[in-house]
Length: 243
Image 1 (cartoon, rainbow, N blue to C red):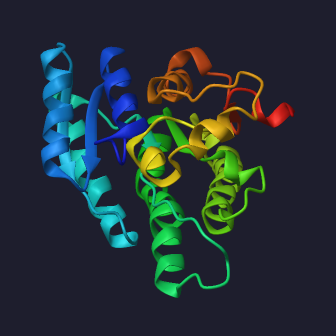
Image 2 (cartoon, one colour):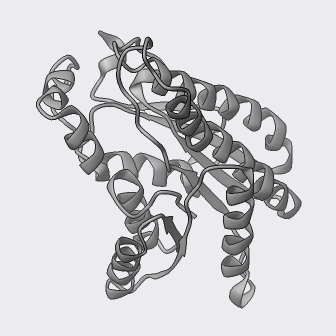
């Protein structure tokens, strides 16, 4: 299952995992876009189902997990991969940030992944296999003005990645994260505009990533080729962390 997979990095990840042979549960708030992603996967010969989900709290996370498990269980399958991608962006100075904004960002970006893992990882552990990939951000490791709230929530996800790797690893469940830099998604382009290229120019490679660049790394962490990798946070940011 890929959360927030109706656009951007999530959409690219769902398409990539389907192309690699996975049966994908696509989830998101927009049913129309969700059906489009599913149809694109099916037209390419893959298998996918859509589950509408407005992820805001523990209950919505548990409900989505139950639906995804039921879909995965059809024909004797199981939910072996969870990609925590759904997120709420927030930018601006700390002073003046409304409590409702704080709560919405932390609910979707931190609480929901926590309870999705709480609902799904035990089943993976019981089967002795599974891969969880959390989507973080460059702002979790680099102090970027105006992104204190967003970065803090994603930094917490990176800590959870390490904790979950230690907790579920002995049962065969791997937990990793990716840390994307500037990526050409609808949300990033709308929120950052020309600043997207300016941020990318600060890295050695100097260009804005496509969602498929991040999806390729997620697919690696979800697949058997990374069977000896857990607790890692892989930078997908053009080398921004080295300068």
